[in-house]
Length: 246
Image (cartoon, rainbow, N blue to C red; front, top):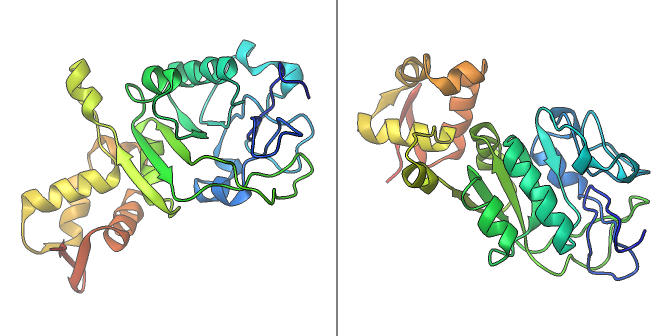
């Protein structure tokens, strides 16, 4: 593959100079829902050893010229011109996850991530990407990576995915652009528990969120609330009783 072409699942310049095609580590994809949870990978590897979404656009399809749809998984080419173009499309589409290097000083970060994303997960350490044949690279990527969530549903996914790193919700844009935004489940449950104060029964939390926009988007919202309580800064103090951890 030439320097002027692109490929996905991590079609980018990696730690080794012999190839531009580097595939997303399967564990990362599995942690954020797996290939079956994504509708589209717009820059997939031409001959991929595993799926990353239900539909793929390979190099021959030129994903920049195609219509994007549904929840998108994007691990774009990391060449400067191409990453700008793909991240601009992702910001315009507004739904899904992108995996890129955590180079926050770059133009695409300033234009298509900070003011647009709902949350970021700066991954701990450096990833080991995979070659086109599926084998894992012995060398790490050479720089830290970040997962970028477009839409509050994918912000929720990052908040609860379990990948080690620093989760950063981005709500400042609501103040800058003058519109309200719904936070992640962790943010919303934490806010409710702080307002409520003291001990709160699980049924009260269910009732508080039953008619919310987040519950309307997630028919399994009660299970999501339990997951947040079990993994977040909360203590179980009795059967069905919870309070915010000190």
